[in-house]
Length: 313
Image (cartoon, rainbow, N blue to C red):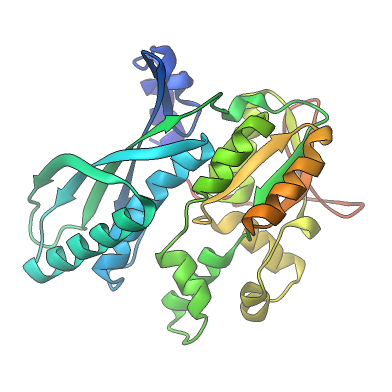
């Protein structure tokens, strides 16, 4: 069974409005006069991280990928619950130190969780639930409208390039490897963007596949100009800037940047915000009437690649 097929089964169970039909990054629950945002992500050795990755970095990534979901909802982190599979004592200690460092960096408290053991030789598997609080309206994936501009934060493809270098055993590319092992959830940007956007989500599985998910949730079409996708100097140095490299960047995943749709009249505010927070915010496409995802390179339409991004099974 594919990930999307299983989620479809879960929709029959997740009937509470807080679940948002399981079409969003997180659940949004009204609790008295507070709006809580809840998310849970898991990471698995050999799928989300390499067995040789430092345990402290694995801890950082586990927390960061969950906080990225909160960022996409414009929420401030409040607390976290950890699900941990026990292993070798030295590895566990290093993980704990890494989690302490990450929690301090992001200003979030560990509130509890659970520990389990697993058969010897099993892939390490960890889960974390992050709890956040939103101060105003919480954007969903479903709010993009025809005529909106499509934007993305930061640069795309760095993490995928870093992972490719690690797997190939190629030295160098330190900043790319850093993006793979230590992603930075865009918490400030998400909180500042939330009042300006119609729809927002984080880019976790790949810019293309996640844009398609926004299009489906919004019942609209999305057109992306791959020539406008922001690439870092490090990525260009390692991968080049040919169309093939740009399609790799757009489908590699693990970016943890913000993808958002906003009305054209919001563009000056968004550009001003980028200057204020020192984070590039790049317009990469349009929301159109219709459905699905399409690509162009300037004025030239181009075919979608066979692989749009990561999907379990």
